[in-house]
Image (cartoon, rainbow, N blue to C red; front, side, top):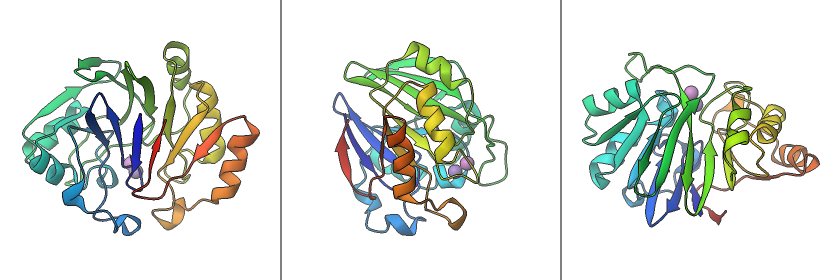
Length: 226
Ligand code: NI
Ligand code: MN
């Protein structure tokens, strides 16, 4: 599966010829200023929770691409009200089979207020199961024992885990999360964008290495195969 990183927690995965774009936050991110929003492809836009650093560009990209947004119920309602024409609502523990595979909305420990201050329901993450392999995106979350449920049921090719600390797991908890989900190939997200979430790349990668895992920290715009 080809994965392109767009900075912060925004990345795209190509599965069965479809582009799944996660948590689009590109135009407000100075580290992503090399990315041309008008060229970012999407067939599906998956939004983990209501915070602006996860959906700032969702409406604009959905309008241009006609992508289907996939989100928790309240975030989905907000997207519909704000100009996204096609929305598929999920709620925790529920999954749905789209053409490319099955998407399940799983728990995250965090908060979720929409940019206009309205409630965004409970935040989540996504487990995506496809014939080309499965992966997990944590969204913004603390380390939680619920992650063990994912490891017990779904073999993962890779996982995108938040690890910038302060608002989410830091690198130490992200290593434990990788253990819980039984995954050795980790794409780091939600780090460096703001001063409180700056991380030491080499130190974080060493922690994963010591646990027999690889932490991939991609540059915005970089693509790699998992
Ligand atoms: Ni957040
Ligand atoms: Mn965030």
